Amino acid sequence: MTNPIIKPTSSDDIPGLKAVLDNTGLFPSEMLPDMLAPTLSGETEALWLTCHSDDEAVGLCYIVPEDLADGT
Image (cartoon, rainbow, N blue to C red; front, side):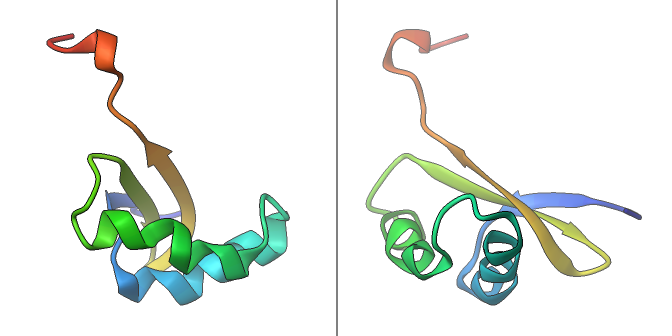
């Protein structure tokens, strides 16, 4: 992997991330758009991140702020 870049997931990342999911079997890729929708629309504090290598989505991460960890 050359020059990996991690940034917030965008709707443009969905096709590449579906391919990642299809190759890993983490969960069915057809679930991804619905899972991302609250984050992409700004309805939640949860955050999805995408790792890009050579402008290709190669990984994803889901993050939720922990209520008891405020200020840490």
